[in-house]
Every structure is written in structure tokens, then in C-alpha cells.
Image (tube, rainbow, N blue to C red; front, side):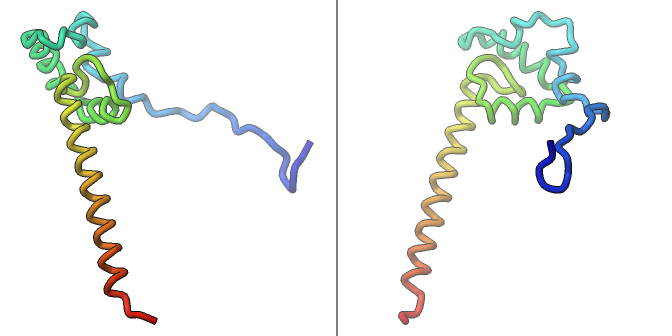
Amino acid sequence: MTRGIFPRRKAPDNLPRAAHWAATAVCRSSDADPDVWFPDPTDAVGIGEAKRHCRLCPVLIQCRTDALNRPERFGVWGGLDEAERAAVLKRRRADARAEAARQQTAEVTAGELAPAS
């Protein structure tokens, strides 16, 4: 059945796809125990070990961005532990609120300065 001028067809899915960034992550390719990435939040030595692995990772920034966008609640992701990610997210929210307040103030000021008709 056709709708409009062109028949409905699905495009072939045979084009090569770029590898996902996580495929080259140290945590995926190393022989490290997966538990390394999820140390107890009070285990400074364990957190430090995970961060040392992260520093060598070629996709550190992508991992960190992904963890902050989701947001990941547990473990070390992108070289940041749980508390560090929470602090970054808190700063982002504060910055967004401050920016919204600045824009609102600018709109009110612009409205007050507009010539009366």
C-alpha cells in the first residue's frame, strides 16, 4: 500500500557503523576485575585504583559526559567518583538557576525600558 506519492519502504541496514566509544574503554578492554570500578564509597584506596585506570583511558571524556548525563549513581565513571559527580551536577543546577534568573532580570529590565505606545 502506498501513501502519497512514494511507497513506504525501509532502508537497508547494511551500512557500516562507527564503533561505540565504550568499545575502546580501559574498563572494557583490561583484565581488571569489574569490581574495581565499584569500590565502597569510603574506600579511598579502591577509588584511587579505579581513577588510576581511568587516567589511562582514551575515552575518559566521553565516559564522564555519559555518566553525568544519565546520571550514574554508583562507582567510578570518567575518573570521577560518586561524590565528585554529585558536586558537578549540583554546580550545573546552580549555574542553570543563576542563568535563568539573569535572563528573567534582563527580560524585566528590557520590558521596563521599552517605549510606551
